[in-house]
Length: 171
Picture 1: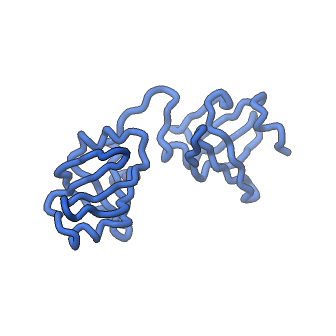
Picture 2: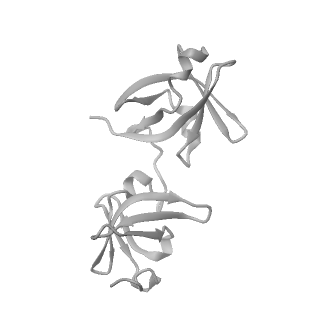
């Protein structure tokens, strides 16, 4: 079974030159230049499509798929999610994490269970962990490394520093 990771969404087409316009969900768009294919989701099924060309115009990334060039052919991709296989992901440096690795982590402050990471929100200042607690309450936790004792995505566990100020309002 392949593990797929969301990297972009198709937002529109550029029919005059045969490209689809992407909204990226990755901090490493340069990986697209070395990728030979992507997977596009169709109702829960991932289909493989080969890349013919990638362009960057300003902050916008455009992708041309092999054997697709007309507006009618390209329209089927609008609103669809693009994925890469795990083997295509760029290895990250220390203290850098993929969002999909953080989701599902159990969060503790000392021995006290705070909840589970359900999402990672991107803000201009820093990312924010959305944590759902034992009674379905939602907590937002700034993802700033100085607030954490340990972040271990392999074991799906995160420990918040007791003196970070984050645990002060806990029961």
